[in-house]
Amino acid sequence: MARLSLLTALSLLASLVSAQCGGTADATVDGSSGAYTATAGSTELYSGASYLAAIQAAIDGITTGQTVAVLADGSIGDATITIDSGKTFEGCGTIDVGYNAGHGAIEVLNAADVSIPTLTLTGAPYFGLRFYGVTGLSLGDITMNLSGGIGIRFDRDEAANVDVSMGTISVTGASSHAVETWNIDGLTIDSVVARDCGECGLLLQNTRNAQVGLVDGDNVGGTSGYATLRFANTNGLLADGSYDTNVYIDRVVSSGGGRGIFCVSESGGAEIGNINLSNNGNNAILIENCYNLAILAGTVTGGGEVRLAARAEFANNRDVSLSLEVNGNTVREEPCGENSNIVITGDAAVTIC
Ligand SMILES: *[C@@H]1O[C@H](CO)[C@@H](O)[C@H](O)[C@H]1NC(C)=O
Ligand SMILES: *[C@@H]1O[C@H](CO)[C@@H](O)[C@H](O)[C@H]1NC(C)=O
Image (cartoon, rainbow, N blue to C red; front, side, top):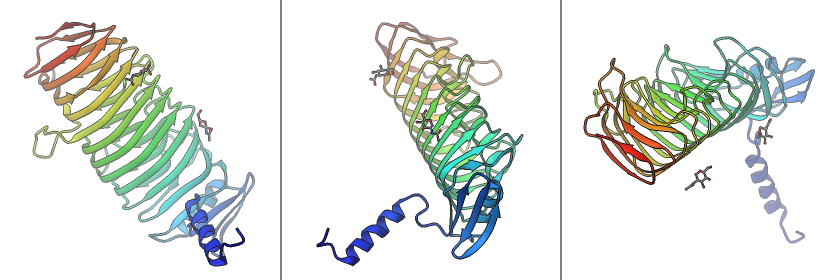
């Protein structure tokens, strides 16, 4: 250490600080219960009892291209934080949130190039994070330990979204979905890890050109028909009306809960590389009115029937291929789909067309 030059020591220190959460922030929220401050450089933006007001003052006090870091822990109550275009929001502390009906605890609406590289939420929100009309949204590592609500939600009836990326999204205890999308063109996700969530782990709807690493659900979907991974409502349908493959999922792991994988209501255009489904309480896999879905490899152990089915209101399944080892379960295609290609090994009883 004595041989280290002062300059080397300083640059080491600088890189340590910048690697820390909040290390490069232009504005920070600090303090603790009852006494919070928001500061940008030498300017005090807020000082008082409200954690919510301190956070919003910090966001409103920076300009596009700048970063806010919330260093303090606290509770925002039944309220909403809004982040506008071009801003980066780092949640370094733990933000406890409440229930604001129809709203997210944090919202980014009709905005471009917002980044949330790290965030930890607790509480029972209506939505943890709510989005619509976003382009170039980047979410990093997001942890939500919830006691209710939906983790992340992109709205159905509002402007569509373009170029969304997510790192690792870990959601525990949502009463509904961990992550629910609508209307995204261009989505990448490293992983969604859902534990003890009431409905879906990852629910993709009317979303196209998507690339997802891992979807991992344990006790997700409870006694419902929801699934660790669900495609619904024309997911994977391209603008030209085709279902050419455009949704890629590397791996799905699901244990217990409701369904494992569920493709429904005119969705498809998807390839799933590898799966490991065990002891799902409802269908391990249900494929219903789904077009061009391939599951390339993996295992299903126990759980409810692997089923290809159809509702009368939409065209039957077509271009479904499964290549799986299934044990302690059954596989059934009824009614017959068009151009199914189903190859099953293992001890499952198989009834296909
Ligand atoms: C969130 O839950 C995980 C797993 O139960 C736990 O390790 C972690 O400490 C929790 N974090 C917070 C902020 O509650
Ligand atoms: C699949 O998951 C089950 C249950 O978690 C685990 O016991 C098994 O080792 C996994 N199999 C593979 C091939 O990863």
